[in-house]
Image 1 (tube, rainbow, N blue to C red):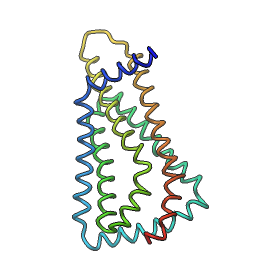
Image 2: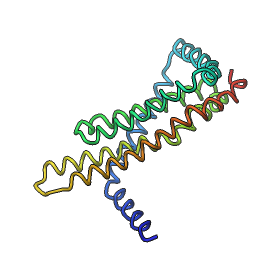
Image 3: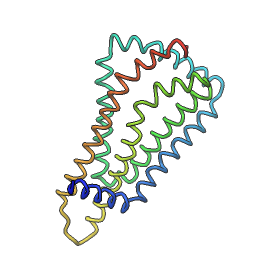
Image 4: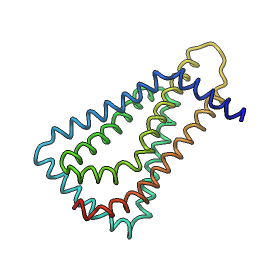
Length: 213
């Protein structure tokens, strides 16, 4: 119990000390969502028709993926999410993370905002149903995972920069271990999100396929 209270206190202090960085990452995500929503609202009629045709084909192919290529799809999605975890870790130990991380978070928000807005605006109730079944489940883990990964990477970049500019001695091995362990936990969250996307989302889409198409 004492160890749990100590850990809780340490986490509270960590987030409180770095609250501005966390707010910055969240703002980047919100900016991306708003930009995506605006972009979806400015599509031409022809662009909307192309996207709707693609969406219809995607829903139709879900059943085929479930029966013939689910294992291959699982490997691809899991690999993609694990690569993002590795990418955030690498960006955290390099100074370029300061520039790249905000763009990744904004891009993730843009994709989320664009997709949700397009579905709801063009398909109304059917769009809401499709968004809830195809976008929401995995993003319940993906969004917090991306935000926390960006946050921890950003914090580590600044700590590393402070160490490089300071004459004080720091235990870099300890810092790197703590950072790597935290990123490993987030990568596990991204892995679980991939499992949801592969094994839970397709059956959900299949359940509402008759209503949407």
